[in-house]
Length: 124
Image 1 (cartoon, rainbow, N blue to C red):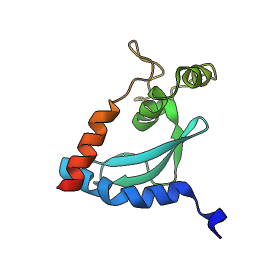
Image 2: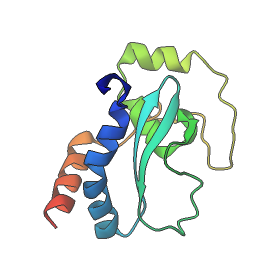
Image 3: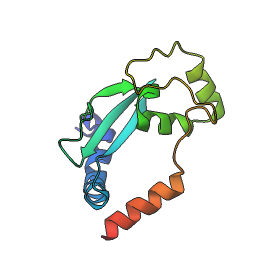
Image 4: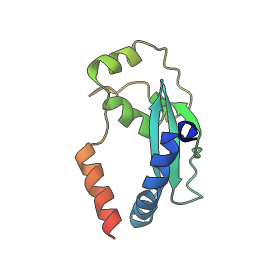
């Protein structure tokens, strides 16, 4: 029975109360997602329902075309990031989909800051 339990589902349910508090605190939609192959899977989406975002829980998007995907890619090891980047082509799927950055490729947020924000939301 334990073999059929999805670890992503467990992580999502543990994180959901913190993500809900963070979304309420900042007044924006907050996502939790993971890399699965070259795709980003959205595990949790909390916040405004009228956010205009096409994301929903359990959906996948090309990692290079989503904010969370770019952050996850930025924190891959150099070798894994190079493997990903060599796997193109990176087709522009939407108007907001950027294929590369002039600074750090696929750059993202500082993980320490994200952890501090989550910790603050949890205390609120």
